[in-house]
Length: 247
Ligand SMILES: Cc1cc2nc3c(=O)[nH]c(=O)nc-3n(C[C@H](O)[C@H](O)[C@H](O)COP(=O)(O)OP(=O)(O)OC[C@H]3O[C@@H](n4cnc5c(N)ncnc54)[C@H](O)[C@@H]3O)c2cc1C
Image 1 (cartoon, rainbow, N blue to C red):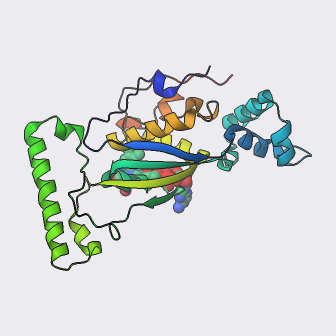
Image 2: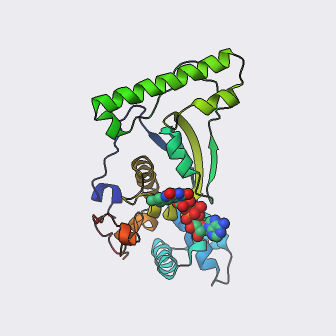
């Protein structure tokens, strides 16, 4: 049984702020480890990938995966993709998420969706934990939404009225990444130096991906799981436990 990063590190989805994050794995390439292994083995085999998918033993699949991951032959990991439906996150989060250029995205539009009732605002735990900070946050959110409504009433189109909407506003996004990009994303965003909301998202995505391809994702996550911290002087000084080695 392979260790689960999420279990091993004691990660508990926060879910403590208003507008709980909801992350679902909508689709993924069937048998992702076999798909990657067949693509990698093809480079050195006299037969085609279709035959390799059928004929490779489980042991052969793992052996090939171990070789490609340890040797950095990472283009092979691009043959399996994952699509996640992400709801209940802030625009502050999605602004960071869409910086990952090798992923594909579609997001709820503030041009085409008009908000007639006050939308949910994602309240950071640091704000929620402090009564006066919470009051300031709630009042500013309500004022921004009220002003948005007044602009709509005045005939301003939603695409312009939305300029007043805060970063805290809840949104929905769908994202597709191949395994190579997912591993890169997990390295950056599971790191304890990443911002709390996108870190929460990355850990949830890792938990879902790990269940489909445990051998590939065995040591996924922040760089400190595999070796030294990649953050240099900016290190948090609190590394994750080391990941198990691939057998
Ligand atoms: C802790 C943290 C703090 C951050 N702070 C800031 C900040 O203050 N300001 C800011 O603007 N951003 C910030 N970012 C975002 C960061 O700069 C990157 O835009 C984001 O993390 C995406 O990373 P990436 O480019 O490696 O990944 P992706 O876009 O997912 O690309 C994956 C990999 O593909 C390759 N690649 C992709 N596109 C190109 C290209 N055009 N040319 C060559 N190679 C390419 C690179 O090897 C890249 O690492 C921060 C990110 C983190 C994790």
